[in-house]
Length: 579
Image 1: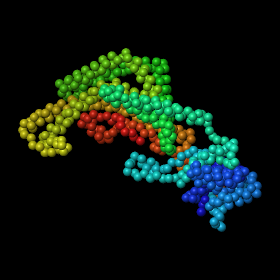
Image 2 (image 1 turned 90 degrees about the vertical axis):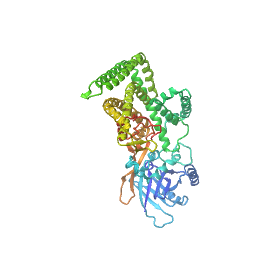
Image 3 (image 1 turned 30 degrees about the vertical axis):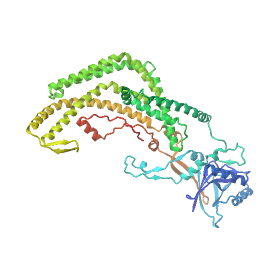
Image 4 (image 1 turned 135 degrees about the vertical axis):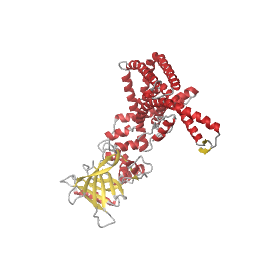
């Protein structure tokens, strides 16, 4: 039988004493947590072990003795004789060689057996890294095909989870250093002094009042948003259509979670809070940088001066496009009367739009100056405002698309109904199916006339619909890219990625072993190292929930809607959250 002894890499320099740790029978392994030094009283050691068990719920016990290279023979014999005072299934006697301090002799004593020869593997581990790390279970669905819902998910628990859990739960043991006036002296990774930071302690003390004030402000803003002021009919409709409203509500939810004074119950809740907090800080920081860039060198004025000529240029190009459609576009034979009516109708809308833009030209710079201040709420809010401004500036294109789509859709549905009339069928509205039907000659004659008229007018309508649909799709793609960028910033787990970059051992995917010392006739020495999670696995595990703006229809359904003339909103946000 092979016995594994996990030995802290900070303890080979320790003086002689007792090995304090936990025995894990399922894995036939012993985890050494600390070394108790002289002078000590066995009764005090037992009392302290009971206190640790009650607080940490870890079955901590004395596993054996440790003899350093500078110890005397009498001390070693005394430590070995203590096995009768601390009964245990296995009593490990680790002795450090005087010639080579990195080589240990390990003798395993079992009181119930006469033959005490056991193969021992000494595994050196970094106690600080193991205590601070979180060992993640491997999910075969994540490792395999994460996009196929039919793939069954199987969680693979690491065999070393108990070792990591033991070291993490015994954090109380590591708070005792040599400067504390305690009857028992230990050697562990913090025995020379506790690792702490004045800044961290100050932040901890100030976090509670700050969170209470922030929670009060967020609650006040939420109550104002839910008041009757914004529920008035026109304001309610306009407010519900804005991307800025969706992003502000999303950030308010984040602030409510961050400002909550309830302590995180587990690692997942802590990481979610930390990711939200870091994401909010970086978002606001990027927004402040954007404000600094916009308000330097009068860039707001330059943007306002360039906006009106750009709108005039777009309107002029649209006017030229309509004049081209009113002629013989690409040599196509169009219905002259219908072409003239549609062309003049759309030209009149362009004229109204240009008049509106020039009427607002004197206020645009002031409006942009105040809109630029929205970036102080975060870069994502500023991008949402840009998306809303894009919708406002291209409202005439949206109107053209709606007019063209409605006319085209009516003709498509009219032609399909009349085509069923020729075949002696009709659409049953109640049963939602096509049934047989008999028509008289008058109905067939009128249907033939209407079918002929709609069929010959269809190319003219279809051309206008095609042109304005393409223009609308260009605007939709631009807004879709903005929404994707906003969702990317909202969902990115920046705190977890920062840990992976600065402290990769904190988010552990597993462990690996390296041969540390191999001497004939001596126990094999291995060095345990932590394998961190990959960046892809971190994003998959800790990705923040966000309001998805991905297309709600498949590409086939989208093409079908475009063909029959139904209105499309492929980047419309859903009301539910997507994880």
